Amino acid sequence: MSAVSATAQRPSVLLLGGTSEGYELASALAARRQWHTINSLAGRTEQPRRPAGETRIGGFGGVAGLAAWLRAHAIRATLDATHPFAATMGWHAAAACAQAGVPLLRLERPPWTAVPGDNWHEVADWPAAVERLRHLNARRVLLAVGRQELAPFAQLDQAWFLIRCVTPPLPLPPFAAAEVRLARGPFTLADERALLDTYRIDAIVCKNSGGDATVAKLVAARERGLPVILQRRPPRPPTMTVTDIDAALAWLERVTKPAGE
Ligand code: NAP
Figure 1: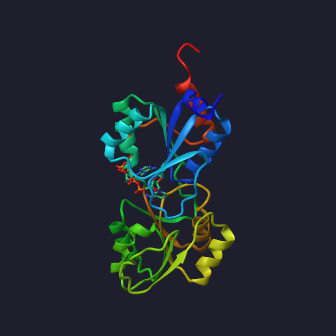
Figure 2 (figure 1 turned 135 degrees about the vertical axis):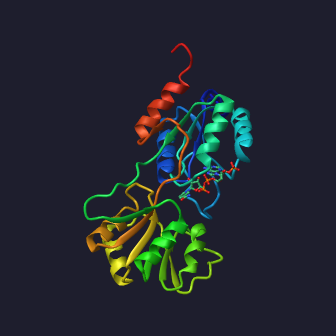
Figure 3 (figure 1 turned 90 degrees about the vertical axis):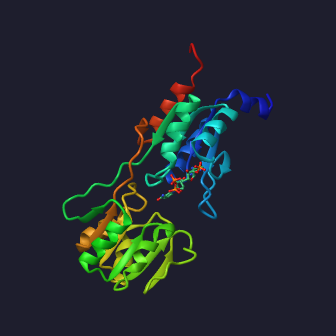
C-alpha cells in the first residue's frame, strides 16, 4: 500500500496544540498510526517544539475560516489541547466544530489549588494584579506572565521586576527597573528556591496554568511565606473535557470508529 493511500484511509484529526500536553498527545497519536493527525500551532513562538506528525502553523481566520478548513480537510475529530489561558481558540473551535459537524474534545490540565500555607491573591486580570502589588507594597517581583502581557506592570515604578519568559520581549515595555531572564520550564524546586533567594524576590505574579512543569515556584513561595498573585483562568465553552491522554485516545477511538463496528 502506498503512503498516500495509507493516509487516505486513516481518519483525519486536527490537534490544536502549543502546550506540553498537545506535544505529548501528538506523540501518542503518531505512535498509534491509526489516524492522520494534523497538528496546529498559532505561530507565536519563534522556535517551537515541533510535535510528531504533520504540522501547520498560523491562525485559521476566525470561526468561519476554521469551519471551512475542517470541511476542506475532511476532519473527523478535533482535539483542543491549547493552553488554559488561550482565551479565544476554544470558543472558535467549539463554534466551528458545531458548524461543520465535527466532534470536539478538550484536553486540559487541572488548575492548581491552594493548600495550607499558601499566600495566594487570585485576580481576574492584570490591572487587578497591579493594584494588588501596590497594596502589598511589593519591591522585588518575579513576573512570569508571558512576554506579551508585561505592559500593565511597567507603570509600577516603585518595584524592580525579574521578567521570566521563553522568548525575548521585544520591545520591552518601559519598566523603571527590570531584568529579563530567558528560560523554558520545567523548573525544579531547587532552581526556584535559588532564584527567589538570589534575587530576594518578595512577590510572584503568574497565571494559574496548572501542571507540573512550573508548579515549583509556588512551593518555594509557600516555604518562604511569599505572596503569589495568580490570574484565574478565563471562561471556556462547555466542551467535553478530559485531563489525560489515555482518555483522549479512548474518545478518539470511539468517535472515529466506522459506522456499524
Ligand atoms: P488565543 O487567544 O486563544 O488565540 C488567538 C488566535 O490565535 C486564535 O483566534 C487563532 O487565530 C490563533 N490560534 C490560537 N491557537 C492556535 C492553534 N493552536 N492553531 C492555530 N491557530 C491558533 O491564544 P493565545 O493566548 O494567543 O495563544 C496562542 C497559542 O499559544 C495557543 O495555541 C496556546 O496553546 C499557546 N500558549 C498560550 C499561552 C497563554 O498563556 N495564552 C501559554 C502557553 C502556550 P484564528 O482566529 O485566525 O484562527
